[in-house]
Amino acid sequence: MASFLSGFFLSLSLILAIGAQNAFVLRQGLRRLHVFWVCLTCATCDAVLIVAGVAGFGALAEAVPWFEPLMRYGGATFLIWYGWQNARSAWKGGAVLDVVGENTQSLSAAILTVLALTWLNPHVYLDTVVLIGSISSQYPDRLIFGVGAVLASFTFFFSLGYGARLLAPLFANPRAWQVLDGIIALTMWAIALKLLLL
Image (cartoon, rainbow, N blue to C red; front, side, top):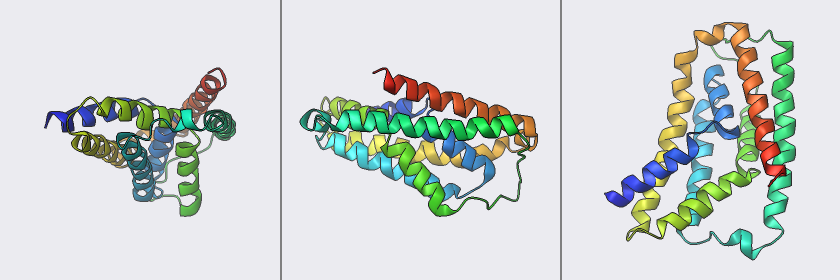
């Protein structure tokens, strides 16, 4: 039980911070667009990375020297573009929350965005593969530690995606959408800048 709880709370603490993935899940949850599949994709990607880390593949970045810079610059480029999209939405304004749900984004577009936000972000690898993987080696039952970490990811993403609906009344106001889009844009750019300055 100690290994399970340690894995659960470590994983939860690493994904609680607002990041590119979390901001997108929150936005999808507010718009009620493909929430289940977006949450499932995020949690499954995290699970794959956590399992890889716990299984001992944390040395990938060291074994393949070009992997880290490729992910870093590719991720920064994507985050700058994604931030620009949100900045334009914040500037133009006019968006309101349609409580029935807007069907303006295809499922494939939503999943591709989630995959890009996940796999092009080097911090995801550092948090899941390297950090969780290395810490798991300190526990006698790495498998149970990993199960706890994976469960935390599923719990968090589904809570965020479906819990966002509680904020629906707030986002009936167009100004709230502008503020959210502005915050997301600044978050994306801050993460991109951090990646470029590593």
